Each structure stands twice: as structure tokens, then as C-alpha cells.
Length: 471
Image 1 (tube, one colour):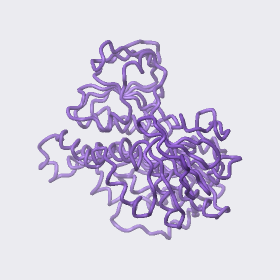
Image 2 (cartoon, rainbow, N blue to C red):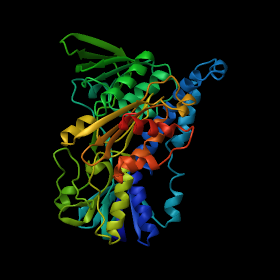
Image 3 (cartoon, rainbow, N blue to C red):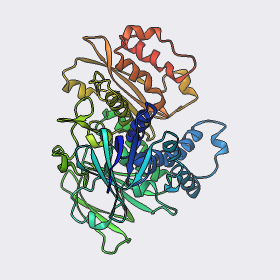
């Protein structure tokens, strides 16, 4: 088979691959994308987008019931079938035909199939039937943007029980299972527990950590756990799952649980949902053909230019490199890699505190930079400033009576913010100001000059500055 010539080959068309391909094509390079699933990737079809479509109705209903004059008009429960129908609109019924016109418009070729490195700057593409459908050669760069897949922990009987992952959970059809056990108390597990409980499903949330959202500030996990418990979610934290039994495929399953004190119990459910980490999608990628070995966790290591060390033509962006498993960080990496490929070798990933992240539970948890724990691990002398999210006029109209805390961490040696965690109703929209303040290292005393509008919720910054000054 004669190799087709391109400037750049992009393997994977999730958010990172899309952004990179578009930027390079607009700059005049000849680009081809290789995709073995759906154009737009995990986030669009099985993760970020469908999960938000499932979460939003419950949050709107809860907010409506907190507002006098509106709660009297809310007389029913969520229409589960309608919620799922709307979710199907968001994910285009798992059809990516609406996603491909922009590729055509930019002159980007699309080859359907699994891409495999066969040598320096060469990629063979295997179609769904196992036949080789294309051989591609890049004059400038090959970019790996294959993302990650859900992990299944090694619990006896779990894999044999055919558990759901985020993919099945976010695309489930009507009717939903009556009872589910969710394994994992991080962002994915917490969001699914929130969504499913609001849709009338009996949820048991299981985790080996002693709190929900263990990587965030403790108060955030406590507030989310409180709302989940109010919804009737059975939280079992700090537990060990010893085995899973499912005698009949598609039938009920039993999860055996060992509590921290050694006590044992079982959970009887109709489906098990695993939300316990991700595995890099590098199987069959042909890394050995170019003498590249994944790191100890299976990720493709890169330098700050997103290049694979020792291979100036090979890049890895997004989740597959393991740096930050976040869609927006993958897009940022694509921006950096595109500039490097276009010749701006001085551009590189910025070092700094942890990036912004949002968990869209009730309450939402939005954070950027350090938590108090990670700041101490980094040797920073930080001052913690907390105020209630409801502590301003704007909160009288949005999120009144809902749990929420806004926290800043100020590096006392430099007088700048190095971390922020906000919890509350729709608080994710409020965190970007903190992201800018941290990224630009704006001195706290200068933030007084950034006057927020009244009566917006962003006036919470006045309360935070006042608390910092000891008012």
C-alpha cells in the first residue's frame, strides 16, 4: 500500500486532538485525523456532556424549590424519560455526523480505524474488520491524542459481573435500574450518585477513601456528602470491596463490603457502576515500533513541549500523557503543541499549582491551585480565608439556603493567592477570577481595584478580601 503524505498525523479526535488539528490546518498545514470511535471523543459522548445533561434537571428542580413563588409552581417530580431524551439530543444519539463538517471545512482528512505506529513518522490504520485501510506518512509530526478508558479494579468477580462504567451509566436508556452501587467517590462517582439519585434510583456509593472527593478540601466533600445523604444515598466510606457475585448475566448482583472496623455487609443491586480511575489508551498503538515505552502507569511521558523525549517528531497530548486528566487541560496542551509544531520552540507548558477543576454535584465544587494539604506539602506558608458562599446580596437570588463555602489560600511570603476552592450552586462559573489571579500572581492588595458589580454573586470577592484584612 502506498503511503499517503501529510504534514501532521493526529491519532484521536477528542477535544485535544480536535483543537490541535484545527489550529494546524488553519495555519496552512496538511493534516489527517485517525479515529476508531466517534469524532469529538469521550467527553462529548460518554463523560462531560451527557453527565451534565443528567445533572442539570435535578439541580434546577432543587433551586426552584428554594425560591418562594417558584416552589409553589413546582408540583411534580422529574420526568425521567424526558431527561434521558434531552441527554440523547446532547450526545446526538451517539452519531458523530454533526461533528465532521468542520473537518471538511478546514480541509482535514479523516480516516476511520485504529492508528498504529509502524516506524518513524508512519502510521498504519486498521479498520473495524481488521483489515489495513490506510498507510500514512507525516513530514513533520505524529501526535498521539488517544485519551483514556475506564479502569476496572481487581475485585474478585467484578469483571465477570459485567459492570457499567461511565460510558454505560451516562448513556443508559429508559427505564433506569431501580438500584445501583457506584464504586468510587471521586468526581465521576459523586456526579453519577447525584444524577441517579435525583432521577429516583436507589444509590449506594462505595469508596475506600474516608470522604467524598478526597483530593479536594475536606469541607467540599462533607457538603456534597450531606446533600447526597439528604437524597437518600447510602454512603459507605473507607470500605474494602471483597468480592462481587452475579449468578445470572443481567440479573441482580451482590457486592460484599468490609467496613473499616472489620464488619462485613452486602449490597444487593441491579447494576454496578465503576468510577474508579482511568487507563491510558495505548494498547495496540505501536509504541514498541518506535522504541517508546509507557511509564509505570501506562502513560506516554512527554516534556514541557509535549514531545516524547528523544523523538522530536512524536507528541502526546491530553489524558494519554497523564499530566492532567481534564478536558480543558488537554485543549491547553493542544494549544502549546500546535505552536511548537509551527516552530515556536520557546513555547512550553507552564509550571505551577494544580489546574482548575470542577465537579458538577449539588453543591458544585470548583477549585484551582492548591488545597491546604497540597500547599503544606509544597512547603508554602499559607493563610486560609473562608467565607460562606451565601454571604453577599447576589446569593439572595441564587443558591439561597444551599450549602457553600468560598476559600482562598494566600501565600503570606508573596502576598498572592495560590489556591481557591468554592462550593455552591452553579459556582463553577465563579472560579475563573481565581484562576486569573493565581496564573497572573496578582497581589492581594491589588484585587481591591477589581471592583465587582452589585448585586452580583461575584461580590463574594469583597467578603473574601475583607476577611483577609480582618474586617
